[in-house]
Image (cartoon, rainbow, N blue to C red):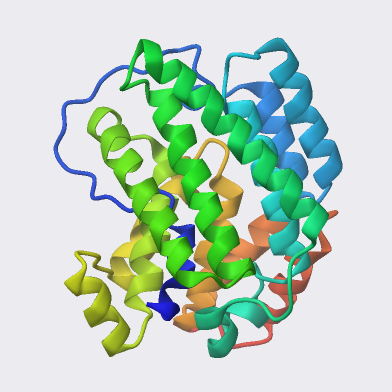
Length: 288
């Protein structure tokens, strides 16, 4: 199970089956584009992490009952640590040892403490909402994201792979409830896509062990699912482009990787990481 660390990315490891579509609450930031939150996520992708968290915190002041603000703050801390550790780069994705085992060294302890505090507060607020409605979609999404991010931290950064797997399974339970109500929640597909891709990338023995536990993966399907977030994602569309582009580099789908990194570098010209990855992608033949 130690190779399952990247399953920590699996915020929503659950198949989207044929459930009746319901109309989400228009006030929900999880299902309606909130300009302040969108601006905060854009700051994350520009690697202006402190400003992004400030934007999320300012929004939360005026929406104290909403757990999405705290889960966004937690995402800001985690995204910063992943960026500092070089996780979201081709150097990491194309290095099989790093890809399968996680980072070298340890994460920043202060940053991780802030991350854990934000996750705890997000979960507390989400469970308060569930006291009124156990199937509250906002709460379920936040609990799913929180458990998934905990799995990221435990597995990729702390290399506590079994603990990360337990968090992933918890996220899976929340995800099933969420997708039962909202199978078309577009940002969710990046998580199921990463699940399929990462599990499908494991060795045969690891895939068999995961399969025995009821966890299946398919790299092609995974990339197709991430592409759905690339096409219509609300807050996670740029993140989906990063993941799909890096997966494309691994699969030698160089034209796709080049296009996505070009789009990211044009959308966020002040993020030198995107420019660097675009340059690296352009250094290889574009024929797939």
